Length: 137
Ligand code: FES
Ligand code: FES
Image (tube, rainbow, N blue to C red; front, side, top):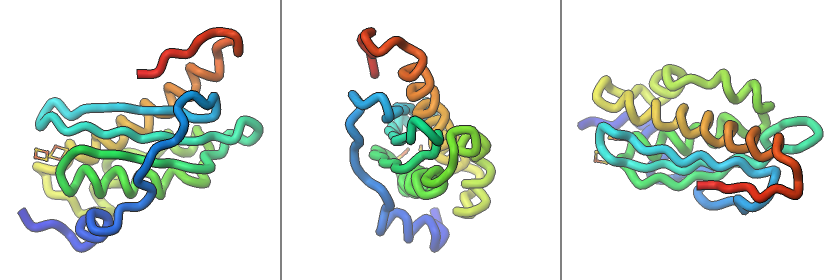
C-alpha cells in the first residue's frame, strides 16, 4: 500500500494527539470503531459555550496510518469552526485531501463519524440539567 505524502506527514507528525477532560461540560467525546478492521478512534472537542466555536480538539487512534492521518486532519479542520460548520465536514473531503485509495475510505468515514459522535455527546451534555449526572462512554 503506497501512502500519499500527506498521510505520511500526519502519521509521522500527528497533530493534536491527546485527551481533554471529558467531565467538563464544554468537552464532547466521540468514540467510534470500524467494523471493517476493528480500529478505534477517539476524538474530543472543547466548545466555547457562548460562541459554539470549537476551541480545541484532541484525538487518539488505534489503527492504520490512514486512520491516524484522517483523525489528525479532522482535529485540524474542526478547530476554529462552529459546531454546525464542523458538521459539514464529510469523509469525502478527507479522502480528497489525503488522496486515500478505495480500500482506505472507511478510515476517513471513521473520522467523520468521530466528529459527529463528539458533537452529539457535547449536545447531549448541554441539554441536560446541570444537576444531572452525565454518562460518557
Ligand atoms: Fe490494520 Fe486497520 S486493519 S490497522
Ligand atoms: Fe481500518 Fe484504516 S481504519 S484500515
